[in-house]
Image 1 (cartoon, rainbow, N blue to C red):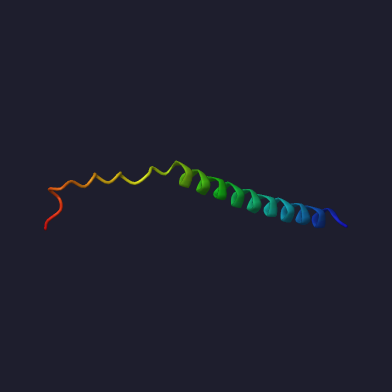
Image 2: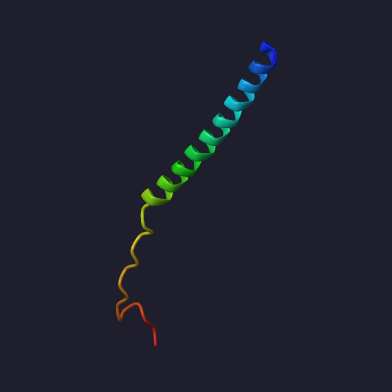
Length: 53
């Protein structure tokens, strides 16, 4: 195996590792975003004045 073949294989391995890392980081960011998302505004309690007969 020549040096150019070794370099090409190395580039392929590095590219695959970078893709895996990017995918993992995106999943982590998505999980953090859903975890940190604020709860929707609480509903105001209903009163008798709100209800119409």
